[in-house]
Amino acid sequence: RDLRVAGRPIAAGYVESVATEPGLQRTGLGSAVMGEIGAIIGERYEAGFLGTGEHAFYERLGWLTWRGPLSVRTADGERRTPDEEGYIMVLRTESSRPLDLDAPLSCDWRPGDVW
Image 1 (cartoon, rainbow, N blue to C red):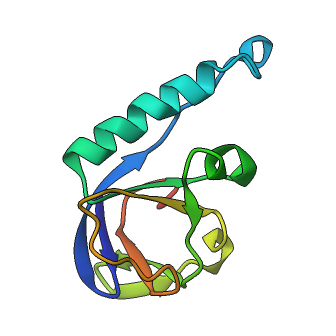
Image 2 (image 1 turned 90 degrees about the horizontal axis):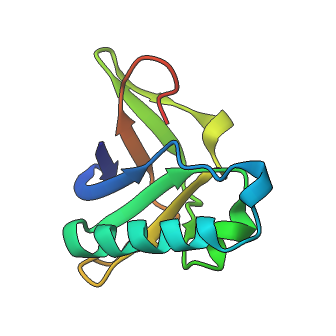
């Protein structure tokens, strides 16, 4: 995904569509999968991003809530996406430049859910 922090492009690994079957939840499987995903992000990207309402699960794996305003970049310019604010999380990596979690964060437009 083409994400930008305060207008600056960031090499972002964007995590989507990861779920654990309800009967297998709380067995460590989700944590193991997200640990592997975190390792891949750490090797290849400046930071990882995902959208969730399950903050406690990701926070214990090192993810932080993005606090700044969110927007989507469209052909007509940037458009705020306030309904998504508070749901985007970031995983810093060793190669992360200092990330201001209060800075504006924008994504490229795509059909469906932009975030």
